[in-house]
Amino acid sequence: MKREIKEQLGRIYEAPPPLHKKEFLQKWNYPSMSLMEFLTSQAAYIRKRNWGISAIVFVIAMFGAVMASKNLVWIISAFTPLLALTVLTECGRSENYEMEELEMATRFSLKSVILARMGILGMGNMIVLCFLLAVGIWDEALEPVQAGICIIMPYLLTAFIGLHIVRMVKGQEAVYFCVGAAVCVGSSVFLFREKFLQLYKGWNPLWWGGIVLLLCIGVARQYGGIINRTEELT
Image (cartoon, rainbow, N blue to C red; front, side):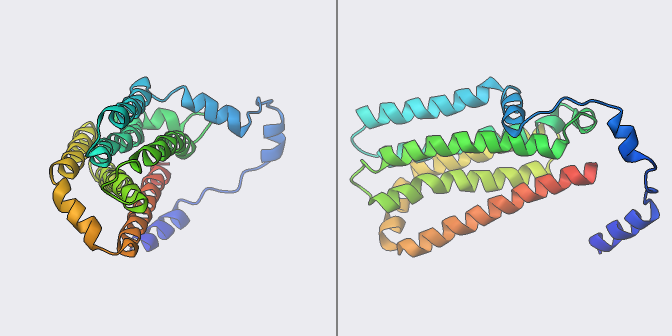
């Protein structure tokens, strides 16, 4: 029904074909920008505290690897939701500051800007997570595959819940709910680590791999929903 309504509205408000569009555009000399230059320009707009959170998680993992002889995986897992929080707060930044209309009128579409910033933060988080996985396998309580799943699952779960919140909740309240979700997931992982440890040892790794795959699909769909929302605004 929603798709049919959109199609009907598109036909009703269909704009007429532009006349002499190419001739008009040729009059203007727009400076070119490569993809790397665009990504670099958007990286400068990402708030420094987001990079600071990633650095804090990195330092905590280093400190835990040196000082903690037990519960190393669970310490790391409890802080991975903070990495997801850096992406979540950047997703709704334009809406929180009521800058969506202004950013939609700029040279690059709001969709491209959000994709670029989320991609940059996502790649940075993946680098940190790879390091955390390498550190986590030192813990003898879990096998390397189990340790990897234990570290990545809180990140994906927080990202899935937080992206859904960003889609459903408007304004600054979304940030508060995302912070609450990250704190709940991280604290639950550490407080109930003994129960989770029993589950990890008792379940087949294929089951856990399937859960991780479902979370990845869910996160991708939430990302798509956020991008589609920017297209609807346009």
